[in-house]
Image (cartoon, rainbow, N blue to C red; front, side, top):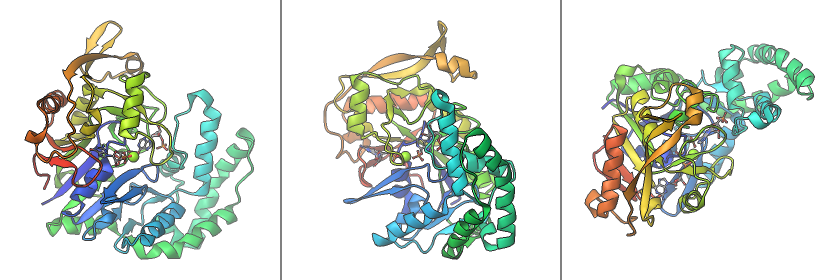
Length: 427
Ligand code: GDP
Ligand code: IMO
Ligand code: MG
């Protein structure tokens, strides 16, 4: 059984943590391939709730090896505190593997993220302030610091010097901030080196050997399709590739190894941070979705913007990721509405458009065209099979499936592991 990718089909927070955890017991490796601790993945096991930021959700499944791939950006202080937080709760984290090629989020990357946002003022992206964009920028500019650099003090010093050379000019002259001292950064980073060392591995080799041995590898995306640096609503995106191709580059596994790409899709839509969002609600319905769905950011605690389901987005996610399946989450949150609007197309400058517009200007002008679907009032949180759902809930799922372009193979009816209806097996 080869590799599966599980990723966000909208703007993040679709329920990737829960979906990964559900499969965690049946897979051998769970791999994060992009992003960093901008992610907030919630896993509910019994009465225990975990919020994972950098670590793959598979860390909560005892048989599974969690892997941080080369495409991830790693903040060492966050890594160590997340590990110790889990250890205190009795979770064994000793199997974790971290790619030596993963880039490090340094303290100056976090500073640059925050001052850049402040400088942008009204035009800000609304980043998580975790240093994600500046760290990927350093990677692309070839002045990044990698995990393996922590083990060669001379190289580390040279690289920090090179990175700070231009940054200190910008910090002092443009942003009116104090310069950051090379020695201080090097000292802090060296302080993490020995603590992280037991986990550092050639993860590309490990994963490819595992696939040759017929082990099951699950790639857990962070963020979502519309936050992708290439395919998302640029510039209101994150700085990595959450889409399916990112799993190949971010873990060093060829596309021929990937057999299944599962899009996690919320039964409505949410977004955190700035940027266009055609179905966004500013009324009581939006407030109700936020309240009933508990739509508050796991990482930054910000209220999430809420809106109705957008089938144009879902079709787009199917296309750019080559989705084989959807996992529809939070259907239970829609219980109680008499009618549920679903966006089936956009109207842009008086014309009906069925697919995501290519131009940013058009997307900013897109108005949702809604179709009303009949709602249901029965509690669905105990439903175990599709036929347990009220007829109107079944029809809602079938309509979404039809519009979105891939089969809905699982449905979430609550946050817990067992609050899931499995339609087609993923493994
Ligand atoms: P992720 O970033 O994609 O992992 O998603 P988040 O954890 O940020 O947000 C999803 C939230 O929805 C979490 O609080 C989950 O516990 C919760 N959740 C996931 N699936 C379901 C579901 O089917 N029903 C309900 N009610 N909550 C869910
Ligand atoms: P998970 O994995 C939702 C958003 C931020 C901001 C933009 C850029 O939990 O789904 P960044 O700090 O990445 O440079 O911020 O991306 N963002 C997320 N939104 N869920 C996430 O992760 C996100 N990670 C980043 O709010 O708009
Ligand atoms: Mg999240």
